Structure formats: C-alpha cells, structure tokens
Image (tube, rainbow, N blue to C red; front, side, top):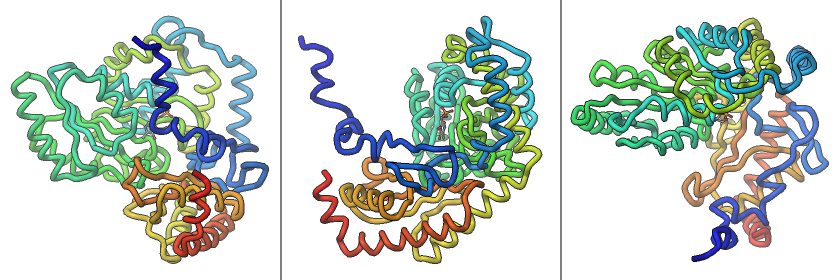
Length: 414
Ligand SMILES: Cc1ncc(COP(=O)(O)O)c(C=O)c1O
C-alpha cells in the first residue's frame, strides 16, 4: 500500500503538470485595477478581452452604489444558513419573481453558483430509469451533472441534429423499456466557439419524440433575444425550454444563478437540489445587487445595443483583416490560428507584453492538436480604439506566427 499523496506527487493532473511553466502568467494571471476595457497585467495596461462582463455592469457607478449600500447594511453574511432552514428572505423571493418574469416562466429558484446548481439540478431531475441526451461540447457543470446519473446517457455530436435525433431514438428505446423519461441538455450559447445551440430544431423534434429540455444559457442571458432575455427568445422557442438556466456571473457581473420553468418543477428543484439544500444562501449584497443589475438590463437597452455595436465592429474588422472566426453567431469571438502549444505560449506572451492585448488562449486537448484559439469577449465597455489596437496587434502576431518566429521562442519556454 502506498501513501495517498504519492500519486499526486507523480501526477499533477492534465493542467497541473504545466503549473511550473504557466502559473501566474497563462494560468492564474492577476488582472488588476477596476474591471474595465483596460486593466493592469504584469505592471502594464492591457486591453482586456477575457472577462464576461458583457454589458459593462461590473464597474457601473449605479451598480457599485447598490452593492456597497447592501454590503454596509447587511454585511456579507446575512442571511445565515441554507434557504430551507434560515437563509430565506423577501429579497430572495423578489429576485426569483423578477427573474421568472424576465424570461417568461412561471417561477424561478436561485442557486449560489451556477456550476453547483447545474450539477444538482441534473441530479434531481433524473432517476436511474431516465435517460439523458446531451451535446458533446457542453460545459463541465453539465458533464459533472451527467456523471452523477445512475441510468443511461447518450452524447450527440456537437450541434449535429442528425446525431441528436439518432441518440434520441436510442434513448426512447431505453426509456420505453425502463418506463422512464428523457432529459435533453444543451447550451443556449457554446462558450468556446460562440455557436448558438440549435434549440429551434431540438424543440421541433418534441413533436416526434417525448423529452424535456434543459438549457444552460450562461452566455445568452443578457446578450441575445429581445431585451437580452436569452437564446430561447432569440430563436423564438422559449416556450419549448422546460427548464431554463442562467448565471449571474456573466452579463449580470455578479455571483449566483437561477433556474426557471413551470412552478411545480421549480418547486421540486427547490426541495431536491442537494447542493442548495445543504449550503448557505446567497448573501444579501449579491441578491440586492442582482435586483439592481436586472433592473438595468430591463430599463437600459442601450447596454445591449452597445455590446452588439462593439461585437459587430470587432468581428467584421477581424474578418476584413483575413482572420478566421469560425461559426460564431454570438458575441463570443474566437480567432482560429494554426500552431503548436509552445508557439501559442510565445505568441500570447508577445501579445500581452509588447502589444498590450490580454485575451484567453485555448489549445490542445480542449481543441484538436495544431489549432490555437485566441478567444475575445467583447463588452459594452470596449471602444473602437480597443478594436483598432487589437486588429493591428493580431495582424502583427499572425505575421510572426507564419514566419516561424514563435516556433523559435516557444521552444525555449517549455
Ligand atoms: C455555460 C456555463 N454554464 C455554467 C457556468 C457556471 O456558472 P457559475 O460561474 O455561476 O458557477 C459557466 C461559467 O461560469 C458557463 O460558462
């Protein structure tokens, strides 16, 4: 028998093994200063394209005022205890009512973190007789929820309706044998490449097959659809979404999340999502802050308009400069380049240090070997100058990448 930690000394995990080369720079970087279009990294001002503050609310003076007032009135603890026990308030209820109304559902329930909420919601919605059908590219929180499932699951090729229907047929066969039902899970917007989930076609198949649809709309909420009501509205199928999920961690620039749907289903989740039943309730500063943000989303459509003006200028500018943005249909702006991991590291280092551009980088194993995605998240707080500087910088790094400059530098970084 060996000591449990021996293995950990030998195997730090797929990301952990890069800690020595990457920590503090490529992973766990420190972005300092107020959340905005230009922040400080490594002592230098950089254009920040890596934060999901879509509507520019994070540092809005009205938001800061409400957050500060709520924190000074209630501290960061109130209410104490889980919602079910002693952590419930009229403000939590009010926020749920307003979230439900906003996304046109009967009821909503708050969760402390979207991630944990999603894991528990999937766990609560299915039993071993039920079958889950989900998209191959879904977020880790959905994968973890599916991992808890004791019954059958089928994964379909990303956004591929033919593959979806094939797996739905398989699921139907199993559910007919077990006497269970089918839960389909998709994202409204896929966060890596920016495609919308094919909700319209999925909902259309409800005419042919019997299933319930759960949609994670983390990136669609606030950015898509009439008034920012999300991807279901964008595609005209909000009614076909049985359980709608959005997090406050992106457009709402806060923390927390919610599920919305028919009142009886939401009540069921309220009484059965273990990560919420046995965890402390959202603090009041988060709840009052979320009420303020939701009100601003409702009453200030200019925020979403500005987001899209910046998004369109960024995406058309990059495309006109010859960059491949893949199949994005949303604000998420992936720039596809070709190169290996050391080249990607050298290129991102150059972007940050010499061009003053900070964006996320995605490489193998998240995407196929030889591909690099530089992922830009535009926000309402960005400017045309940010876009111009970025396109100029990207043109500069592309020339260096193509001429092999980063291959030489990258080899010394690993
Ligand atoms: C698609 C998706 N779902 C869920 C989450 C988790 O939400 P939270 O940050 O509220 O835990 C995220 C990331 O924040 C996400 O991108």
